[in-house]
Image (cartoon, rainbow, N blue to C red):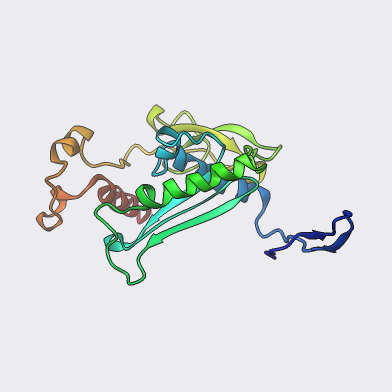
Length: 219
């Protein structure tokens, strides 16, 4: 359980109070690590990239931005192996904070400053390592199974997978499955011109992808 005071000592170093709170494991190590691995990519490929590029924060960290409708709340919650910090930015009476007042533009800079300070006072974060029984595997990004000869080069990716999460089956191919119904060039041409009221041709790539994934699972 969370606690505020770990220990109290007197001037002679005698321990007057020691918190004996004990943690309880909720998730398997493999699941916890995999979640952290995904959250770590937020800093390299996602909405928290500026923590690295702009604010030069190089410590291994994991987290996620959050922004409510109309930019009324901006969040960033993240952690290292030693410290967890959450930052909220908003107004007493909920209303739009500012134009483009997102978690990455408002909360992330504050969060980064706090975490840098934690590093400086002895809470330097370190990489959360994959479980010892993990193995580097080639997987199919469409079905999540082991890549096979039927998996195309564009569908294959590799990552460390803990033994208890390793897929037992192999990809059987997805010849009739495409994530995007139109070419990337088409979407680039339509960028900034999409209007949801115009029908299928105006759908964004993400919405189009979700629909096609849903249709594929219905087969």
